[in-house]
Length: 223
Image (cartoon, rainbow, N blue to C red; front, side, top):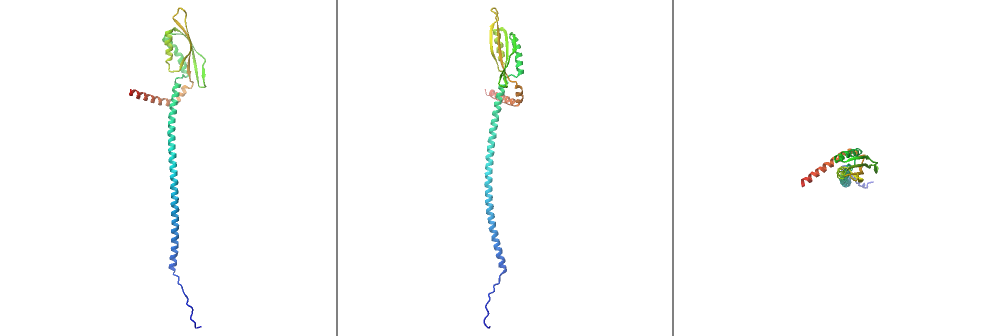
């Protein structure tokens, strides 16, 4: 009853320290989270930059291929146009049906020029060349001296068109005559679609004609 009472250790909790420790924990956590966010952000940014570089590299490669393709297309297109013009120049030596009739009619004037008498001048049956072209024939019989006959045939050959004497037989008019009878057949290449083709390709023809004229002038100046 009179014994000493037990000493009680009383711990007084400092609320201010408690509160500060909370701030330390929260601050540390925020710092850790910020670090992870920074690291993840850097990794993501690095990945995106790498991805963009690949995309840009691919885009540059595609652009280079595209440019190269366009150059090849332009070169090929120019070559195609040139080849087309060469084809058109060949076609220009073919006659349209109208030009064939004009050519046939012009023979009478040439014959008169060289004093050649026309006994007959008729259009023969044409031979088709594929589905687009044909060889049209003019069958003739001339009476003249051999010399004048030669002049006439030379004149006919001066045409810009493709024409050939397919067959010809020459005989003396009679034993006392100095004249001969020439009987034969002239073949001319005809393309019915010529006029439409030349109209459709008018700009192309004009372009290459100007280039040819320019080149001819340059070569002339070099001489």
